[in-house]
Image 1 (cartoon, rainbow, N blue to C red):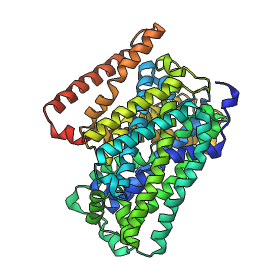
Image 2 (image 1 turned 90 degrees about the vertical axis):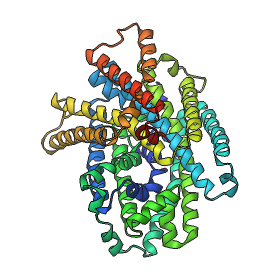
Image 3 (image 1 turned 30 degrees about the vertical axis):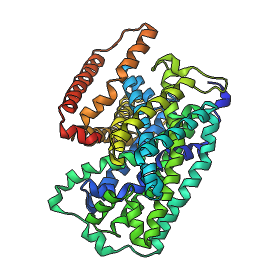
Image 4 (image 1 turned 60 degrees about the vertical axis):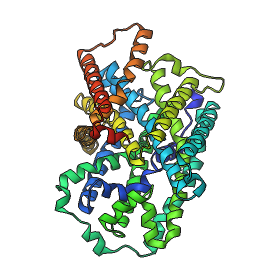
Length: 487
């Protein structure tokens, strides 16, 4: 990569990270927490866990960009540097799948919101959304083929355009004075809903989903003026979004009771539409759907960029097959863009005909992202133990770097437990990760290196293969615990 491509400063990097996050999740927060069974206490505790955990991730990434400036192009480089070729590949694959599934989630969300506003689209929703969504996808692919870096800069305008309506919604909720402390307290907890801890676990899918993409500045750090700027941008993005998310959650839980919030999640594509309807009337729901459509529509653009860099970077660093680093006359990674477009298209078709819900789609994206998050945090902890993470630091700086590395590793374990181990999602993860082994084998054949350099590489691959077979068997036999996750 030439020096001319290393041109992005803090502001466009912050806009890119915010653009990756600020899309559909913010419009579904309140209803999704309630639908997951979490009451006010558990929701607030869930935000505390996510806040501390995600801040630890961001601060660890910040230190990693300083301590290991040579490790650019995404989280997988940390996994590869720390645990070898196959583990690094697994992280890269998980990140790519998560970005692809996030795009599919946005597709489902944007056309779901539009169908509530445009009667024409609601009639024959499936085929119309599939055709229109496919046209949009391939137009974005053509745009990306014209130059990725130019598209990242253009994204600044896109983020500003979609942030304005969200800010307006928050202000409207406050000014209308509909927040009721008695409702907020009445939602505090319900022993019949299970233990508070089980409720907090249920919030993890939501809190991780709304922050997916926050590390976007790290993923494209090789396009920044320097890697330290990428770390700074990630931290700024996180703190801004956390404040917004918590504010929206608190307002919503003071506007409607728990059961009503659940009904909003069931009757609207985005539960904030129900909240705003309760605040200002029917036009509020339409406003939310319009704002969500603008926000998600622009996020589609952002995520095609993220999908592209999620496969081009690993290919450039000899993790994915080398064809994905092939460049056109605009220096765009042609086959990275096209391959991402094809796989997105396949998933969009599957989601359409399986009638997958918005929530089911983002659950799958969350499952895929947890692995690279966890592995990158394990790497931060590993090099902290070796003294490499805190080079040049002393006193409080060194202490906090250690603290964030430890908390980040613990949060990685928490995410993996809450999103995979606690439910049959571990089988769904196997469905997502097993096909990647084919790409891994192709790359190892290209380099002529040993297929699995370490014993634990082969063990991990074998476990994934076994879980994949089990998942296929359960789906074929109609096991509801698994099939209900997919449709």
